[in-house]
Image (cartoon, rainbow, N blue to C red; front, side):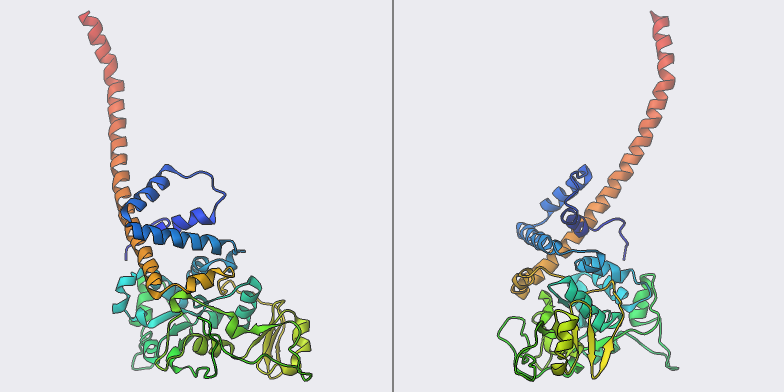
Length: 377
């Protein structure tokens, strides 16, 4: 696929939201956006406006590069060269939505880091630290067959780098080194208990209780229920009818409890059976294992303003599909504009050279013409 220089149209539109301090816009940028608006249908323009409005709300929660929105996190993942996650991220960018049905990427749900959101940066950091970067960058597939399609092998048992995901990495000018994790949704042993009545189908897990019957002080909830589901994946179901929360996130977090502080977690130790974390950095793995020290990954769960994700996730799958198709339409329009812009720039460059030659010609001929006029007079 042809590489485009500079920012994509979507990134240029977002830059206006992400950098409100910029008070001036170049004429070319104004023309670019005006031209885009004219080429989009009224319905598409309305969807773009709604998407930008949502982006503005999400933007208020940005706090440094590692806790930015999904676009910034995707850029961080793509910067991790030689990783399978980076290849998949680029693949999702490069393959148009309308063409994914004929590609094995249609059977890839995404990267763990993109399949959920959280409400605070503290929760994002501690859950990321609990899972570790390998799991955050794990590729989630629908089935074992989908996962198996990511890699082919030679008779010797070595990986065939000329096939599947490795071949795509080569086309991208990258390579995949080392091992990477793949999670097969259909093969996960799901949570089979009761579910809540909310749209996100939170698990009806009983609150922990101390020997005296009270809920521990500082207890915030179960991690599996504190991760918000991405809107476009809210209605995903396995063949047995289980969603991402009962499968993927229950597999990752299980009955992991979340507390305000390490001290709260320490005081609740009697009712912590499967591990706990605290927002100030404490990690208790369970079964007598503690995680001490400090580590902070650049790759975190995106942080969404409370209320924004709920509003967005209640939109019908058709609206979400329209937004994705409009983003693709924006990309197509941007490609056409950039193509026309290059032609114009080439013509202007040629005109400039012709003008310079003409001015040079006049500089040489005007004195001669002046002398000729004087002699005729």
